[in-house]
Amino acid sequence: MYQGIRELCAVSLLCGAALSILPEGGVKRVAEILCTASLILAVISPLKELDMDSYALESARLHELESALAQQGQEAGDRLNRLVIEQEYKAYILDKAKELDIDLSSAEVEVQWSMEGFWMPWGAELSSGCSEEDRQRLSRLLESDLGIPYERQRWNSE
Image 1 (cartoon, rainbow, N blue to C red):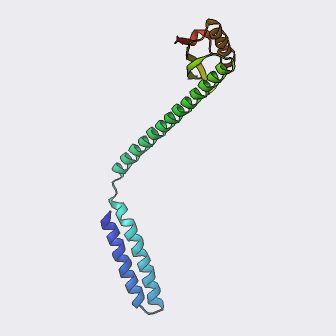
Image 2 (spheres, rainbow, N blue to C red):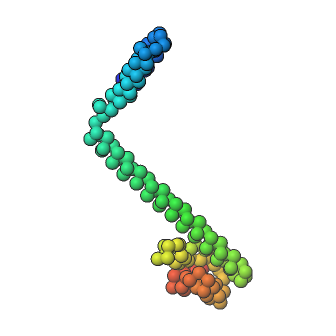
């Protein structure tokens, strides 16, 4: 690789020096054509030493690496979206509990990917020291607003 760069520099210097000392006219035009051809050959000559088998293997390896990195990026984005959506559902539940004057200390929401192509609430874990009546009210709200059935609501008493 470095040898090819050195050859290109040497040919460039030689051509530049030769063209600068030649007088104007037909000889200089022929020399310009020869220098141009020499520079093209100097640029192309390293390609003859290129091992195409190694190049193909390296290209395939880089393509696999690119695919793996793209997949990792997609998964990281999906996880981030999932976490944000879970946090939004948690905030919604806590706000609704506050509106209903229900003492709810924490709420965790589990989401699952739906067939429609978005994250849907699947289950909830709630911590509260509230009465059974308040639990039932909030439970009905979670079922009607978020579609989380009572069976997938886990209540922890404080």
